[in-house]
Image (cartoon, rainbow, N blue to C red; front, side, top):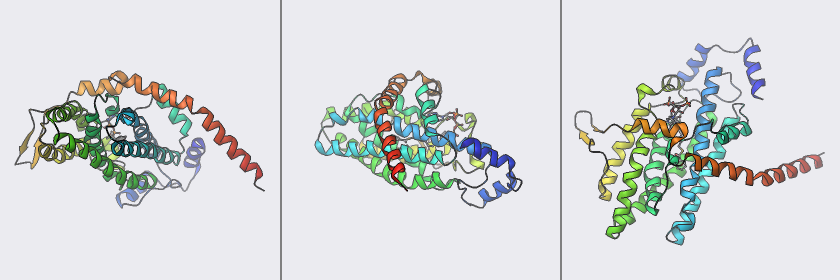
Length: 322
Ligand code: BYC
């Protein structure tokens, strides 16, 4: 299918040129799967949407670890629902990538072989129950800040998928904050668990927004095409400005001595993240990269019989159709 789409683009003499494509984007017109698009636009979208899908799927693992160890039945059912939501997000996103001619099997092969990227944040371990609170509060909080603008991105299927994803992420963020609030109002041991989780998840959450703008190779073109509406540093600043008062409300200390309100800029100044750690995690050297990929490959292999059964069922039904 992908090859066919590329052929249509090359051979169609009425295909619009790049300037008129850009004019449509600038005018806020959504690009739909059957519309002409430059090859670079298609490739950038497949890259970003598939990385996003992989992140949702791999992102189930750190929290999935705690489903059997949730402290109460209520917490367990909330966490179960959240992890299932993440699976759903991954599936919408793989479908959105398929509208661009990408084959799901190829995308999964790239993930399982380690060729494809997924969010750096999911390569850190969840050591205590407080980490589940910190993930909801900080990681889903970051995800909302990144994804709300994506509801207005230029590619129709991606923008529409994001609307539902964002509604669910808002619930995820609130449940994470609620876990943190409960711990912070609890015993001294519970408060120190919450502080320890914040200490470990703060910097990975700050870095999750991507490299500094000056090191972001894709931003300029993606912003011109409105695949991204804000730069990495803009979204990072928004995350920090939003989260500092929440940490103060919880009575927790953000582990950044460089953090202070800048009255002139009307934003918080913050310290420099450890970018070497970020690039190392992306290259596969984070604390849990190998474990995460192993778990995904095993899940895929264990699910082979389900895919075979679903396919056999679909083929049988198709044969019965007149
Ligand atoms: N992790 O030029 P840049 C969730 C890569 S799911 C790994 O700035 P771009 C959740 C980047 O791919 C959260 N890699 O890139 C799920 C590029 O490499 P390539 C996922 C990263 O694309 C379950 C290189 O670094 N959200 O929230 O313009 C439970 C240079 O970067 C990362 C999305 O995927 C990273 N953090 O901007 C709970 C949102 N950052 O591809 C929560 C959609 C950068 O050139 N994606 N890289 O080899 C985006 O908005 C953008 O792709 C990014 C990066 C802001 C992430």
